[in-house]
Image (cartoon, rainbow over the protein chains, first blue to last red):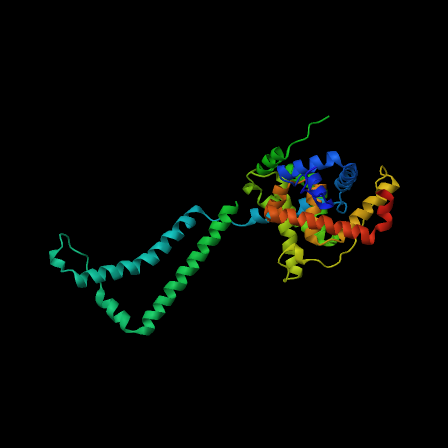
Length: 172
Length: 193
């Protein structure tokens, strides 16, 4: 018998449940070989485990499976009834979204280039961008922030629509 | 005798749109799902709701089931999260099933099985009642480990626990069940020990 090893009920339960590591498992097994009282206790524990394991399952009320199937069929019908988003809409929306984001950026970039780089030194001719229109646009804060707000709002709405359509499309 | 169709085959059939496969999965697992739901939510009415929601969620996400775990383990994980959501809806303060420790309604045992002896019936009834006195977490882990024979690894997967945590919880649940049996069902268990 191991000198420093003390067996207790919890350890024996863990042994019976197969929760011990190999070293502990061996220690308990060796202990049990030499102690009949603990061996009897182990048999009682195994019997209790069997009782837990043989408990009959609870049964739902009659017709439960039918109700689940009815709910599932209904859910599938509702999903099928939702209008499918045509593919071209799904492709168009990100394009519009990209254009809305890219146009002001391109405008700013092009405007900046016309100011900072002498146009005559370029090997190609830059298209004239209506910077003056931007100047007057920027001069009126109401106009500037108004248009900015509308642009942001439209962008977000379009993005939201895109996500919704993708979601519906993905469920199919 | 007809061979039993495996879960994997039923899942494949269900994914290809055969309604009968869904129906067979419900019939195969309804008692397991319902019992587990009852252990978590503690009353039959709520357990019906949780069990039905669990099946619907499982069917909805069936295309995502990759077969890395057993179907039953995956399904029990859905029951666990559905039960937790259900309890949170009723009591937003609940963070884990361990918080749901209020005393429970003793479940109705239904019609006794004629094949079982009276002694077995009494014993089972006492055990069911004792388990019903445990917290949702304890009752769930005891049910999964002893009744459904899920391994500790699978229980970790179902209940989102670490291995050490699962071992500790199982050990504590066992101790609490023993103390409930000793305190409340001493007379009954004296006969069958």
